Image (tube, rainbow, N blue to C red; front, side):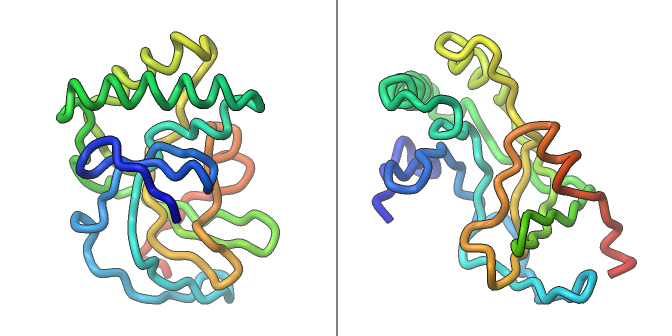
Length: 164
């Protein structure tokens, strides 16, 4: 990984999709393996919220670089602009091909400011549900990317962890 830190807890990796991420590893309680729908899901080694899926927003590397630069400038001058508050009590099991993940909705402060920055370059940008991938199966390297309301509807279904 070639992570590039923007702030102490916010980074992106130009070699892996160029997503801008908020590290929440220290804020997530210990996760235990579970079996859902016959699939064993395991905890991840780190946890993050995707703030801006920059690499997914355009095929043009110059546009992706501009989005990253604009967001990075905004966050450097407003280091507390985006904060993780915690996990909401809404969980989803997501499936895409052989990959299966369990995500939890995340509560964040400051996403509106980020949206405005990105919309300067990508006017129709509409961020996905803020979430943290808590568990994944062996076939999933990072977790399934949920980049829009359509992805959430197509790939995920809400689950009650008490029933698992």
